[in-house]
Length: 115
Length: 115
Image (cartoon, rainbow over all chains, first blue to last red; front, side):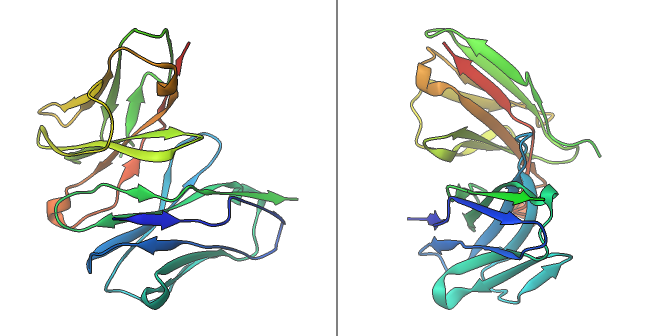
């Protein structure tokens, strides 16, 4: 069965601090996709990144970076020099290949960035 | 391109009533999924539609149903509402899993309150 675990439920940091959001997943499939979504107070889930199981390259996009390690089944997300606008709930999600786009989400991690 | 739109945005219903929520996907997207978000259970998959066919269904009672129209718009219906159905209902669309795209884009959600 698929499962996504985000052990941290809430983190509070001061602006300009770096913060890492952990995500551990479980799946029996060899082909799968991992995602990170951001949910600001407005409620809409904003797509941040998708990674497939065959691509373990780390990715950097501006202040955001992702570290995918199949050996530890982890897909961690780091925000460098956090800003108040980064305050949101962040979700890690997993989708298996094979004809369905069903996303299995972690419980989410609420990040508060204080000025 | 316009994003995913959901109507209504807010809804208050009484126990025992039924409700219909609507979702219009991004233009050109043919796959629509629905999710329920509650504080206790988090984000849970309801169902997924492609070309007017239900491709996958989550673990929800039969009171939850949905459909997709030929223009890819989708509706979900909940009959005999219970207090526990109070939630944010999110709709997501994607181009097509058959094209190898697993990026789902979410609408702002419908906040349903059952009293």
